[in-house]
Image (tube, rainbow, N blue to C red; front, top):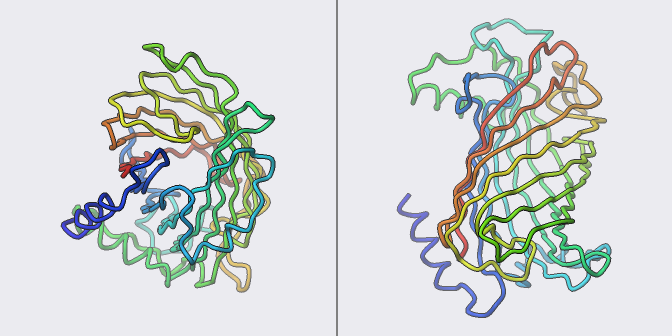
Length: 317
């Protein structure tokens, strides 16, 4: 923690003094333990770290992303960054050492990603945020998902899972992701209580995930951050939000199994719905949020929904 603090302090000294956005650091933790009733199944754990550079600064490793067009976004401001993460998936019954053919496989995904975000307008008047991401990583034992879960269960004194020897195999993975959000309606930003309607759509491509999404989110609160605009003014504020997203799925590595070798798999549902709701506290340059995520069944033998919590800590330099 001391090292993280020193890094944040150093970056704060490099922050821009002009009207562009500076560095943004985000820590995201996702776990099905922090919902009620808590569980330990399916998408059970995710930890993700993201660091975004100041506006229009292009780290040399991100230069290929700078060659991409803006796809109709005028007056675009670009922001580049990197993300590092690990996701863990298990069947519902982690006490059995037997292969559970009717439940999803044990699986892990460890990756490093390159990000480009564009903020601007479409049709000359609709605030728009485009998120591009290219993730490279590995599945299977080399993702260290089994070691991570063993360590965490030992830390909190929970019995260890018994079936990780049935996890999908080690395999390199690529995930290309795009998502566009548009603020099609909002109340006067100067009002005490503000409201926004933000529809969006996206697509994912790669051996990890081939899918498309369509949804919308509503935000209501006080001093909602202007994350679609040129700058974000540090303020005290809060907002609540709720949204839903329909997902059409052609491939999911963690349900369909490996591409280049034979592994445990289940028959996935071709579509599912992801519903989320949460609360966000704006503490000047710090943002803290909690999100409840609800997912309809993702594979044919799944007889109940899934739920997990997302918790975010964001610091803007």
